[in-house]
Image (cartoon, rainbow, N blue to C red; front, side):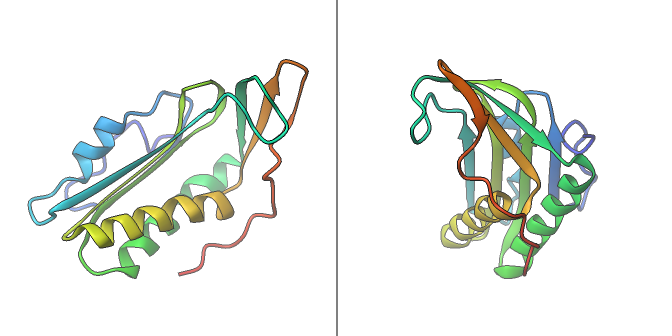
Length: 159
């Protein structure tokens, strides 16, 4: 859980973390900015008040296989840097624990020389987090609770 709380050192281009603390889109956006990058994309995933067949969701609990999360987040971020030219910095942060509607559960931020690469890398990161990182969500709504319907096998991070 240490990756989110402490900024990486000079020269680092990847910042990943798993935490129970609230996530700051502003902090992510500020950190990815570099003088050689003209684009920055910040994505935030938030807890919504419904899911398929589940009205009035009021909270979500994220569970994580914590010793596996940060290494996988790092591989995703590093892979994003290798996939496209001109990527400056990449942030991927995820929360776990109980979150309410409107709480931010994941932040991805990417800077690059040009906007197309930043958008592409940010999309790659969030899509790969969803398929390759062992984090599961349990939804709670008025009439019950259960695991999210989008659960699947955890895939390996591929370049």
